[in-house]
Length: 420
Image 1: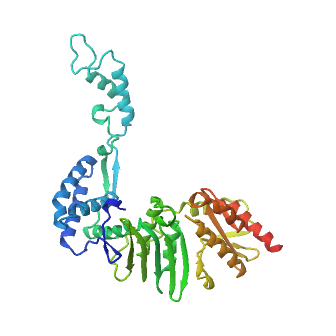
Image 2: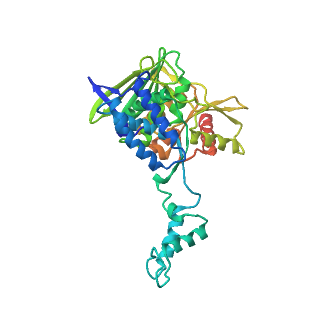
């Protein structure tokens, strides 16, 4: 992901156009290839050496891409390559312990150690270092005293992309960077789009969403970081990570209300003309884990008595056409003895408006014969004052992890209510 200083876009008649490199531009491909070669050549070398080379390449390569912004493009490409690197310490010993021991021995001397022994045979700098070497097993302690500084790290491995792959990643990253400043994101999923795939990434990233059924698909509204959190970076990063997931299907149309350099702007994209390609491998291969949901599955499997309820992954979207709304449950709870089915949705980040809307949908679901439970983390909410009313409305709260017993208690409570 790019930092804000790497993100470039221009305003044209109120619409925001992120910077884009053509994957057919030989100049862009040549720069991308040279940067990849530079990183590959520095495997096993210190970070400081690579950073010096990168600073020099900015001056050499940048003007050929763009006379005014070329150096920023080179920095952005290098930042994306940084994500594909692994850094290692130059020694196994702890540098902090090493230098602390050097300072302790030097401080214990009657006077600072000299370069040479002199007439009084006072301990020298080499004597101190020799003793530290014998104690720690590090042959040259002076060379590794500050090996924990970032510049001393060694480039351990580098997952080298092709130049075309790096340019494609750059174009997606520029749009992602714009989404850091979004108030709301609206995605219309057309007929034929893999809605389940899109919902997977919405859930995985814990985004605040509202779903509306359309005649030929769905309209997905995602709150942006500026709408409720005042620009919280954590949520903004998650919203940006949603984009490559959306790119894995089509057709879709996206519009986002964005604050760009103090002005309101509109970002518009669609699957046919965006010219963007996802670098994600797909839900089964994504390394990101949804900790809350996976922890709940493990907790359910460890539960000694689930009262006959079996846990399944969510399958259906519950649509409320009259309210122009829908729910996407994460799990289905099925009672093997009675055949009863209860849907469970676990919210990620939530706002007061989001929680109020969910409680209203819970009531609507009950009236239509659906049994639905909503679980909300107390730590991911923007308005703690809304929780008491939400709990009264049937929302199950938790802190870090959703316990199986909390869900089972909510099921029993609902059963008792229905019997009354």
